[in-house]
Length: 100
Image (cartoon, rainbow, N blue to C red; front, side, top):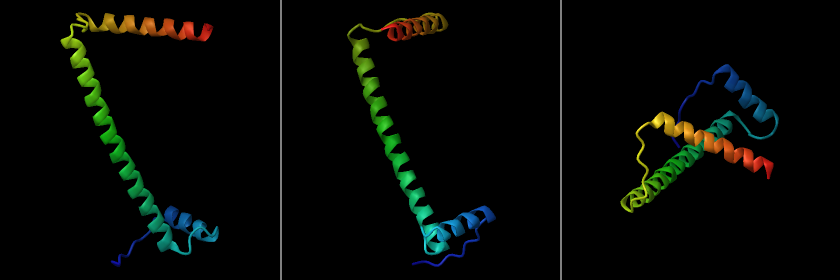
């Protein structure tokens, strides 16, 4: 194990001491180790989510390209009007869902 001296900010020291007092950690070193483990886990989860999002986006793009190749695309000359129309339709759908 590599030795490293860490100076905790006062709020972190108070937190570490409260974890020790509550019996969740034996000492400050254990609190820091647990925090680093949680940080590493969160980073791994974020990387996995980013990877999944990239795969899903590629899948959606492939589906859209295939639809366009089949002539199922929509030509949009006025994006603002198109989005306004979509928003209106979505509002109608939400109103219809609530009524059901």
